[in-house]
Length: 106
Image 1 (cartoon, one colour):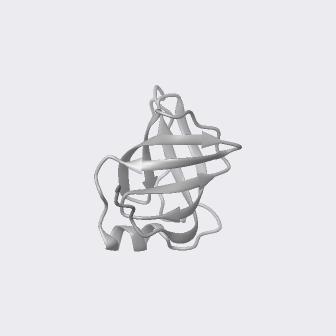
Image 2 (cartoon, helix red, strand yellow):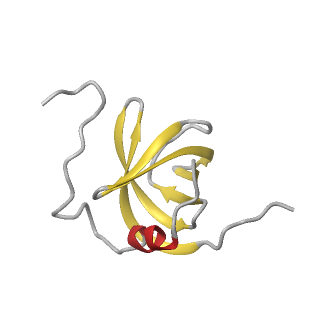
């Protein structure tokens, strides 16, 4: 039997860095092992980095359909990191650094 982490609800916007740039995803639930995001078109197997403020979590898409995706973190994250990612936000925070797409230099 496979162990599943306890999923907690969330309504947080996160940046998802992919090979072609950065997209904004609506984080709907989160656990130490992964997350579900809405509002993005991703491909199963795609490598990403989930980013919020100074937090960065390498991950990959394990399933994707209907502008939703299941994300698995490369390494389990800590309970305190789960709590930080669950913070409600209506948009990127004012202290969040702007993120650039790959290939863009400033």
